[in-house]
Picture 1 (cartoon, rainbow, N blue to C red):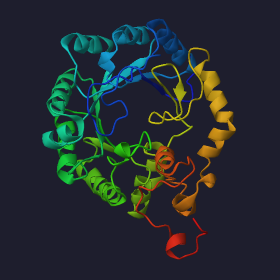
Picture 2 (cartoon, one colour; picture 1 turned 135 degrees about the horizontal axis):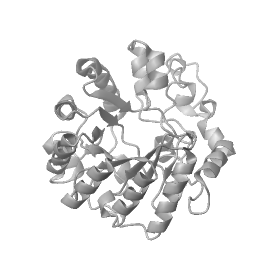
Picture 3 (cartoon, one colour; picture 1 turned 45 degrees about the vertical axis):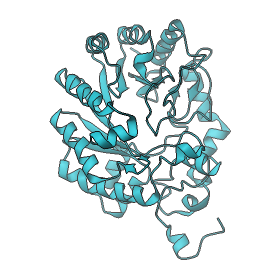
Picture 4 (cartoon, rainbow, N blue to C red; picture 1 turned 90 degrees about the vertical axis):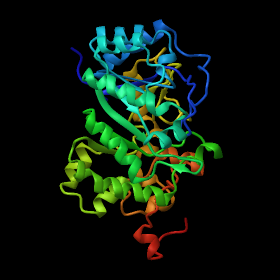
Length: 359
């Protein structure tokens, strides 16, 4: 039995390919990357995840079911003693795939962004029915772990509203999902077509406050987890009971740039599952332990992780240590990984009192 490593899960974006049209995703309507790992390299990666001391092997995409050797790699990971998980929108889930997932007792997260009309505006026609069918089937097998809701604007349609949020929460409650993860959109490039799908600061402020209000109403059935950094500021402002315990042990919405790593389809390790702008090494020629050690000792990653280095509005905010914004959002909106996350509506006290330096 290996000693536990610094991360309990290592996700693998098994392919970049996806035929869906989701407005918030970098893989939408993309082909497989030309240098995606072969099966043998993928199995060697699994060995390195075991050696690294992770206990979970997470599979993401693109569309995972487009990878032809997916279940050969999944079987191998199970044989090596790893717990496994897959995030899917339910599309391309055929009977063979379903049976192999059940055989491996793989935990499933289903992506769903609201009621049918809203979800399909964001993810494409038929996405809602596919997601609900997957939810129903995996719930019966006790493999449904969570539903993942990503906030986005699709033209005149938005899921930043209470009805869509409640629809997904009620689905999770009905089918015994443990969590609903409400995810802020993390921009994947500075292209205007990407950024226009993101919420406005006013929308983010509204959804953070509404989710705070919905949490005690659902009372853990399901649990609500908010992957938006400034949700911590909202919770603190509103007097969340036992805030420190919640923040230190349950809040996963902080920015983990440089404190986490995922493996891309070609074996490159990225310091954030949503940011392909930086690489930390390749599992084909280095161990994960070595890559992790180099990341933690890197001057660049050390500087990016240190909130004292954040610039602009975030840099003078009194909630900086709790929040600090999203480094990927800062990069793609401002061009600076240390810049301010412009999606937060809050005005720091230093600025409101005109005591801040020039920004």
